[in-house]
Length: 281
Ligand SMILES: Nc1ncnc2c1ncn2[C@@H]1O[C@H](COP(=O)(O)OP(=O)(O)OP(=O)(O)O)[C@@H](O)[C@H]1O
Ligand SMILES: O=P(O)(O)OC[C@H]1O[C@H](OP(=O)(O)OP(=O)(O)O)[C@H](O)[C@@H]1O
Ligand SMILES: [Mg+2]
Image (cartoon, rainbow, N blue to C red; front, side):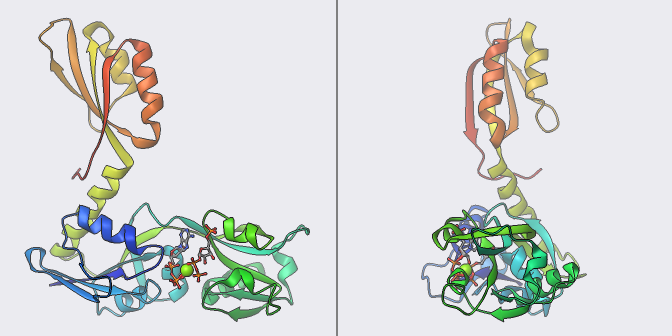
């Protein structure tokens, strides 16, 4: 039976559960349940803190896990990414009080608070900067005003928390993160494992694409296909009116409105965009 770690709470938990549900796996009904058995798919899910997941997967106790790239790197556990999941996007950055043009070199000799000490120490070493790293569990942005640190290194999502505490981010992002599916580095892609990977890949892909359907005069088909080449090639079907065809193609979600504008401009009609729930490519 495949054993899979899933975040039990926090920023990644909701979207991870939703994605597994969309991929056809059994959901937990009680927020406090720590395991869920899915005999139909021969999988057992373990609901764990995202920070601990790389440790369980890296040790080989669990086969797969969903966690943040930043957490996986900070753990130092021997895990590797199988798939980027497209949610939980953040950057991990240095930040310090606004009003000064901070450089990473300015951290030399300073106190730096973070929940990701390994990631930070590695980055400081890369910059040849020696700073005192103070490990905090959370709410790191407040540590400067409370007097325990001069600067921080923390997760930035919208940037709202930094602004609230009058901090500015500086230097290149230490890590550009999102939720990822990991396995133990170098482990074999056993079959049930690769089936779960393929299912999740299908959901990630479905979320990034939309299906476009439209009617097009035959004479304009070439131009329309140039706008919606699809993945392999678009489906073209005859209409009752011999001069028209129906076209169906997948398009990147982020481009869908611009693509619809372009199709309308070349003369396509009845352009419909619909969501794709899941797919196998
Ligand atoms: N505001 C945010 N926006 C986007 N991603 C975030 C945000 N906060 C955390 N993350 C991502 O979520 C993961 C950490 O999740 P979470 O914050 O739930 O864990 P935690 O900090 O260990 O737990 P908790 O916050 O519940 O104490 C990291 O990969 C991080 O990059
Ligand atoms: O840029 P923003 O959108 O404001 O998000 C960033 C904040 O979100 C996370 O905190 P979380 O809620 O996980 O609390 P924590 O600090 O206790 O981990 C992160 O640690 C930052 O504090
Ligand atoms: Mg957090």
